[in-house]
Length: 164
Image 1: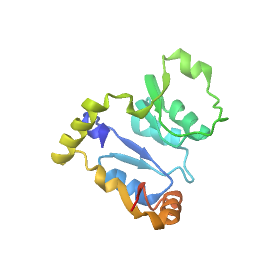
Image 2: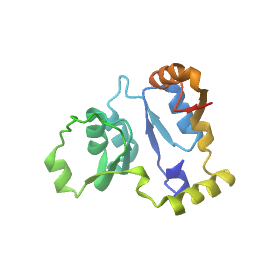
Image 3: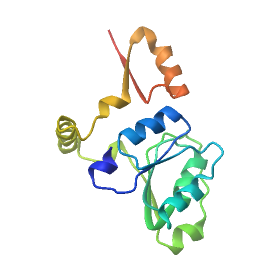
């Protein structure tokens, strides 16, 4: 959604869950890739020719972070928001990173000023340009375990548990 809002013309979503790829297409992805049985980096290179300018990694998994980095075009940037375990380490190809000025950065809480950014998101939602409500599923507190199961199985993108 955000990539579409800022005018990106090629938006590639990668996910192992087919329903999430369908949702990604609905929300603005121009291409979708399932890494099951596919070389994700090769597929991205087929689509773009030289790689992506921006990659957004949300899993925290070292292999996915590496693929995101390997998919970058020269001067491309990979942003990481995925929650890795405390002892997670990633291995990157230093020549791939350095020879074309690629960069990687951690993103904390959106790297934004919430007093400005949240009203902007609300305005985009009201305009119908940022339908984030399609990503959330609400659960009563007594269904907490179901929320966790649904998230792990890919049935819920962003489960929200309501207290009381």
